[in-house]
Length: 395
Image (cartoon, rainbow, N blue to C red; front, side):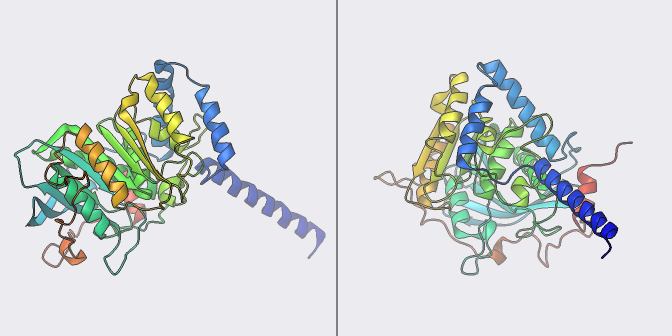
């Protein structure tokens, strides 16, 4: 190769590398060292010393999240056009298969769990699932037994509960989970899921909670940060100052850093203040530092509101990354306290919660779109069509 051509190629490689680095910097890191995270939180803490200053910072971060996700301005909220069918009744609760349109032609798919006792209005709870795959052929995601235990138990305690698919999982297959806009799609779906709960006549607008683990934990604290209608938040095994989530749906868009803001997931979780917040963490994943790093930072934010009693940490040092029974138990009790749910139908004399009354259903019984209930023909076909609906062209 001639020298001139070689130099040209090297310049192109440098430009390409710099462009890639710039893109990654804009999108934000997926992780940093634990010491970097501690130093970053210390710097963040210097930007406010009173409640008004924190509120201003929180407003900037909220704007940064929405702008980074391409949700400024927010899309227009159209008719949800809910689809609800195949009601089944079990011990103390019912389950229905549901879908609604977060955008015209873009469907949120899931299951609605309702209490059989009481006329309401009931608390409403969103249960996004994380990146937990199929186990023993259960279908993964919202079909897993641990998801069904959680949703059904909360319903037996008196809540109306919506379990809904991540984009690209389950029946949410109008685009893939690797879509470049998946973070925005999921955040918008969560906002519209609140709308769906509030559209139900038996749901109390003043008692809306959300809980999920792993990627569902990310959805939990992102939704809580941008939507004040959420009154209680329980992100499980996800809040970390040094790890931003390794998936496109968590850190694939510039929600953590722009030319106007910089933040991390611990600070985003703190934006729940002064609303009740429980952090469940463990010793075998990236939440191992929560008791010493993330929780103290978040607790100091709650101090500004004089609401320290509303934030709680549960640390299970010998456990790993899941939403197992030992993690569900403190969440049940936290929700009962702050959403005024009734533990009596599920609690035993020793304080444990009885989940064996829950009937675990097969995936096929929980599907929304079937031969008898097909997805409408006007459903959007791919991520590009969904993105156009999410960000309509200005006239």
